[in-house]
Length: 199
Image (cartoon, rainbow, N blue to C red; front, side, top):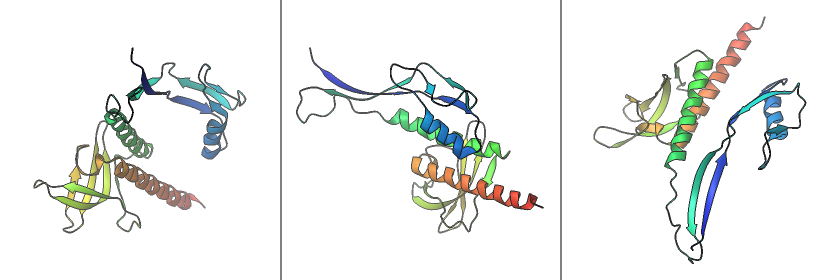
């Protein structure tokens, strides 16, 4: 009988409901005082009036990371590691996070300011399959799609990406930069609104 070392990742995802003074305290409470260990249950060291509830699926998501036959010196893993599912899931998580940010502000589209000191740059391939460097100028979301709006660096023409396999929506790093840009833009909007509302 052959022996195999199989690396596996089990992941649980759920929601804690906590009572806290602010967002930072809420994050700190969950990070420091809530958790899960193998052979145990979801638990917390906080009082019941602080951690009010939690909702987690009892079955984890199982991912086989690699499979290696034992005894083969310098041999490659028996199977190539398939990252495609995890990449697709992460891409979907980032797009969902962008969608939630816009939804929280009751908008479906956001424009990023031209004077942004740290713009998001992506590569877009035109119909002739030539690469063009573009600055992301905005994002538009629907229930099941993300459209990236960008301006071509040389010509100034606007291009739009409707597919995860065009422009920056395929690249996870660029997507994350878009998420951060949207977050900062909405935070600045909140700051301006709060200053206006002050007497």
